[in-house]
Image 1 (cartoon, one colour):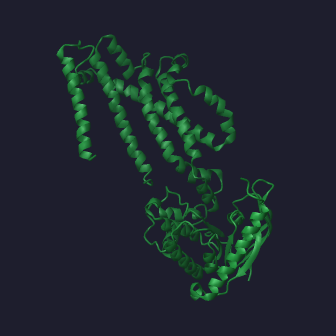
Image 2 (image 1 turned 60 degrees about the horizontal axis):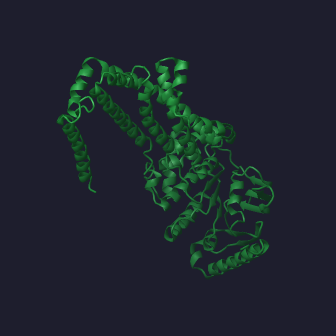
Length: 250
Length: 259
């Protein structure tokens, strides 16, 4: 398929979807609070910005997201790398990981509240859990897959200490895998950020639940699209950085 | 002449019981180019790895002479079968891998890059990524990386095994030129008998099971016309016959193949 054709089909798919939606919403078949017309969203956005909610909520969510992302990624990558490098560490965590891995981040909400109260820390904590596991497993796999021959080459050329090998071979070799784990975590973070805020921590999630209580479904839809936009922007920026770092790949 | 490498009664075993080879006495004289051929599994690569101090446990002794103490050089460098360049380093940074951690200024690094790229015929390639090179070019960068530490001893493990025949002939000629220009001592492992006879001052045949040195064949044919000479063909046949016998002997010792 030509890129132009692809572009045309993709944009016409989106436009048809919006038109169909708008048509149904205006037809009177369904009440507007059940299905708010999409063309009313810009107006909703303007009013949310005017009363200051949009900026405040987006900033709050971004803050939870950033802290959770940094925390979960740092710990996940660190532990993942350590487990891949040291068989004894691997063995001692094997059952622990098997027990804790299947617990969904949202199941930690009660403990997040007990430990941290209804606080930003609690939201960041919940967000970090999902991100931790993604990075933990991808970093581990990435380090295990590093070409052993390259380690031998580095040793043959005088780099024999653990840290020299880590710096010169293991981390650069695992970088593509680690970065794709970070990227997956970037997406996973947006999935949990809303849920983490549903129980009253200021942010997009809280605003959505508030609006739905008032049947202000336009506002709910607005924030749904805001999340899509924030995710799109953060992923775009990440991919730009990633391709800069992985310039050496074909 | 003084031996730069001398192994005595050397034995290596990976599992602690069955040796790969044993009782191995090998000497490489200063400036000599020694080639090693052998039955597969007789430990050709292992021999190079022991000498390069990449295998921690062995019996017997390995002595590598350190005639000059120079902080800007390494005594030994190795060229691997697959070029094994670090794909995340540009060609120039791959070449200077062995210079990191020894006392070399950025200027010297740049000089070494230029000098070795010239030696291997890839001037101006320093800023490329390994993926932008052909297999033969990567192999040459592997050689440049070894030459960059200006070693007295080059260990080469089937360095031309993975490249096509024409590239291989070119690389062999280049290696001989570099060897003549730099006077380094080279221990060169190959499975190609013609290559061994063409390059070597001496061909060492590693065979049997476990491995040992079965025979050494001095090659004194004039290098300028070596490949065309009738004596070359005879020498190749002689080594081939020796290898054949070693393979049969090794097969007999490992017993009938279970089916």
